[in-house]
Structure formats: C-alpha cells, structure tokens
Image 1 (tube, helix red, strand yellow):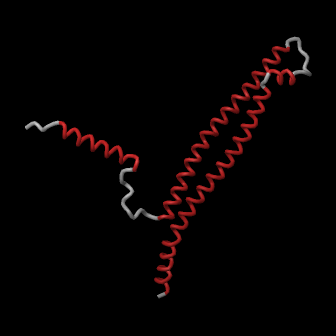
Image 2 (cartoon, one colour):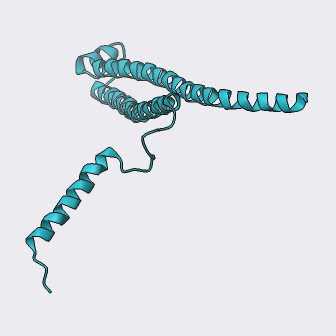
Image 3 (spheres, one colour):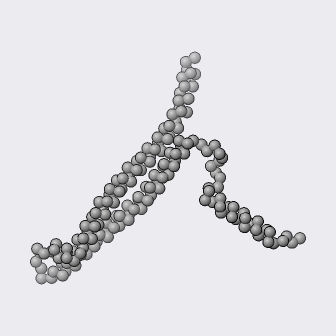
Length: 160
C-alpha cells in the first residue's frame, strides 16, 4: 500500500518542481549572460582608456617628448617609427573594441531572449490560442495583400 502513495507523491512533486526548475534555469542563464556583459563592459572601458592614451601619445609634440633622451643622426626616422608603432597599436585596440561591440550586441540580444523565455515560463502557456499564428509584424502585410486582392477583383469584371 505504501508504494503507490510514494509513487503518486513523487509524480505530483515532479509536476510541481519541474516548472520551477525550468524557470530558475532561464533566470540563471540570464544572470550568467548579464555577468558576461559586465565583464565585457569592463574590457571595453579598459580598451577605451588605452585608446585615449594612444591618441594622446601619437600627437607630434608627445612623440618628440618621448624621444628627447635618445640621440640620433636621423631623428625624423625615429619619430616616424614611433608614430607607426603607436598607429599599429591604435588599430589593434580599435579592432578589439569593434569585436567587443559586436559581442555586446549579441549578448544583449541573448539577455533579452532569456528574459522573455523566463517571463513566458512564469506566465505559463498561452490560453488565448496557439503559438503558430502569424506574428503581429506579419499580420499587417497579410491583411494588406488580402485587401489588394479584393481591390483587384472589384476593378476587373469577370469575363464569361
């Protein structure tokens, strides 16, 4: 007699706990993505400050100042080499910033998706209808094409 009661209790608990676990999974995923976004923002801030410093260092007067203690018979070559070196570093950092911006956009989209999934899980199934209906953005297009079809039928008389 104890075994069926235990099985029934386990089944009921599974039904009750499974949605809560799924919900926390979506929320947990969103939290992990937010943590990644925070790390990415910190990296962007570091690279941005480094880029600002390079922009300052690449000015001709600062290149002159950095090479002031170095004696050479061709100081213009040294200045040009230093400028090229700084320009290469600047391009590399700008490329990293561009990559981080792309990653940031992707992460923000993933966070929005995870938040929407979490919300859908807390709300439950859609009682108003099926999920395979036409999305709202496409409904206007479908209605417009139907209207155009009817308008064409009204203009052309049927030939019999």
